[in-house]
Image 1 (tube, helix red, strand yellow):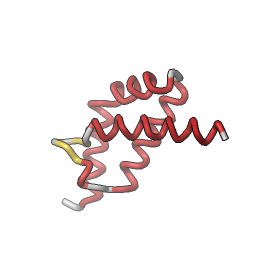
Image 2 (cartoon, one colour):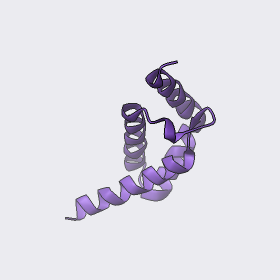
Image 3 (cartoon, helix red, strand yellow):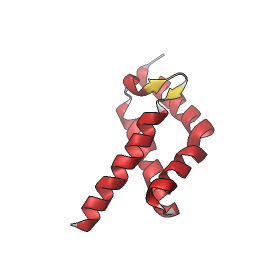
Image 4 (cartoon, helix red, strand yellow):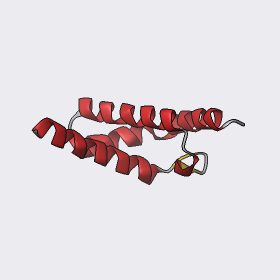
Length: 83
């Protein structure tokens, strides 16, 4: 199976099994539903573009990495908006 095709399958699994959890994590970080949706969308877009097998875990992606990505993106957004 090609690397990008496997990545697409893993993205589908991530979405079907963990989308609610990712949005809940993003909401806990940002305290805003709109920002949480944007953060999770950015995560999906990043994972789709990178096709990085080092981020895989079991049949999906490493959820701790996903959570860390959401936190980092939110912090970067705060710094960008603050300046």
